Length: 463
Image (cartoon, rainbow, N blue to C red):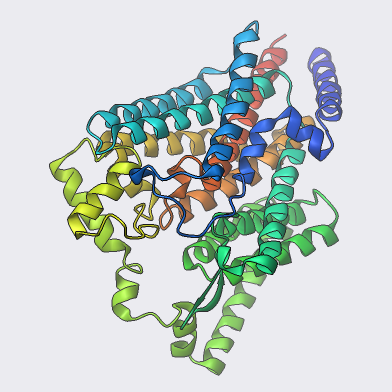
C-alpha cells in the first residue's frame, strides 16, 4: 500500500512537471507541433469555383498548400528516422495500420482511375498527412504536452481563421459570402476557411470548458456565443444539426458525472422543450419549418438538396464496379460523363459526393468504406474506454488528459455527423481533412499515454 501511494505521488509530480514542460506560447507551440499548422488549410484566397485538378489547372495557391504539407511531412520523416525507437501501443498501432491500408487502396485505385496521375498525387498527399500524424503520436507518447492547451490552441486557430474570413469581407466578399433568394446571406468561408467546421469547434471547446471549469467562465461564454452565432450565420443545416447533436452528447455526459449536473441538465432540457413549444405556438410550425429549410421545396428536402441522386449514382456504379472509381478524381470525371456536362463547366458543387462515406466508397470501393468505418469505430471505442472511467477511480494527475480526451471525442462526434453532408473530411489539401486528422491524433496520443499510465498503475498495485 505504501509503495502504491508513493507511486501515485511520484506519478502526479511527473505529470505536473510534464505539463509545465509541455506548456508553450502559441507560436512556439506551432513550431513544436507543426501538425497544427495544417489546421490553417492554409487559407486560400481564390474564387469559390476553385480549380479542377482533372483538367490540370493549378495556381500559386496549390503550390503553397503542397509546399506547406511537404515541409511538415519532411520534418516528421526526419524525426522518425532519427529516433532511437518508436514506441506506440499496439492498440494505437492497429488503428494506424488501418489508415495505412486505406491509403494503399487509394493508391491502388490510380490503376483504374480516369486520371492516374491525379489519383496517385492525391494518394501521395494522403500519406504525407498520415506521416505527420504518426510522428505527432510517437512524439507525445514519449513527451506528453499539456493536452488542454492543445485544444485551446486549436480553438485559437479556429478563431484566427474566423477573423480572417470576416476580414476578407472587406476587400472581396464573394470569396466567403453568398446571397441567395430564399436563404439570404450565408457565410460560407469559401477556400479561405471552412466556417462550418471552425465555428462549431469554437462552440464545442468553449462549452466543454465552461461545464468543466477549464478556464474562466467569462471567456468560455464569450467564445461559446461567437461559435454558436457564427455557425447560425453559415445557415448550413448539416453543421447546425451536427453541432446540436454534439452539444447534446456533451450535456448528457456532463449530467452523468453527478446528481446536481443531472438535475440541471434535465431541468434545462424541459425548459428547452417548453420554450420550443411556446415559440411554435407563437410563430407557427409552418413558418419555422420554412425558415429552417431556407424555403426549399419538399422535393429538395427529400433529396437532401439534390444529394441523394448523386449518392444513388455512386451506389449503382459501385455495385457494378466494387473497386470504386479512382481516388478523388474518379467521381468527378465519371459524374461528368454520366450527366454529359461540358469539360469547361464549373464542377465545384459536383466535385465530390457531399458525404464522406459515399466519397470513400466512390474513391476505392466497398473494401475501403469498410476499413474507413472500422477505423472510426476503433478510434471511438479506444477513446471511450478512458472517457467512461469514473473520476472517483481515476488518478487526479490524469484528470486533465481525460478532459482533453472527452472534448476531442465530442469534436470527433461532430466531424462524423457533419460528414454525412460534407465530403471534405476525406479530401487532402482541404482544411477539414487535416482538422479531423489533428483531432484523431490527439485522441490516439492521449489514449497511448493513458494506456501506459494504466499499465504502470496496475503493476504498482501488485508490488
